[in-house]
Each structure stands twice: as structure tokens, then as C-alpha cells.
Image (cartoon, rainbow, N blue to C red; front, side):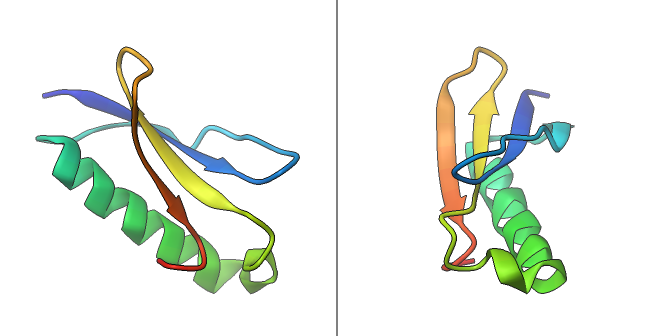
Length: 71
């Protein structure tokens, strides 16, 4: 199963949320949306500050960027 990297990003800080296996890119995108919703609920002060969840594949290619505002 492919591995995908999930990284919370804001304009100053990038942290690694870990590597997760997903069956495909669509599943990884769905998980990113869930993570963004969770972060938005736990840290509402981040909404409107250009925060997002980025997902890359094992080779570092971008899969998606999910802004907290639309999750």
C-alpha cells in the first residue's frame, strides 16, 4: 500500500503529522480533509491564518493541499 505524508502548514511553521498508508490518492485526500477538520475544531484560532494540510506521496510529489477554511 502506498505511503503518504501529512504535514500541517502555516506561514511560519511546518510540522510533520506522520506517514500513513492509504489505498490511493483519493483516500489520502479524504484523510487530509478529516485531519483539517480535526485541527480546525481543536485550534479554531488557526482559521483565517493561511493554515492547511498538505499531502505528498513517497516520492515527495504533491497530492493535495486542504486549507482549514474549507475543510
